[in-house]
Length: 117
Image (cartoon, rainbow, N blue to C red; front, side, top):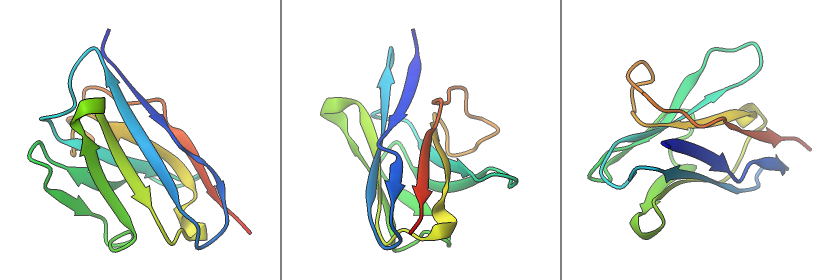
């Protein structure tokens, strides 16, 4: 069974850090593009970052310099390291099997990230 699962969300103070994980089961993430997306209450889903099959990365302007996506091929996992978190980073974060949300066939259930003082 093909599945994606995110983990690592939680409550953090502004300026803090979290590392999200996106684990694949039933298939390998290692050579495909993986997108991280987020959706805050009352807002549209937005792309946060993309890591290509060759591990080239790109980021939304709002997170550039603060977030880093990387993969561990041995663990079939893609990570999103989030540093210097801001209140506006609060959202449910999802990983998907494409950097294009319209093309992504598989999505994880999401993990909640709350940045609050």
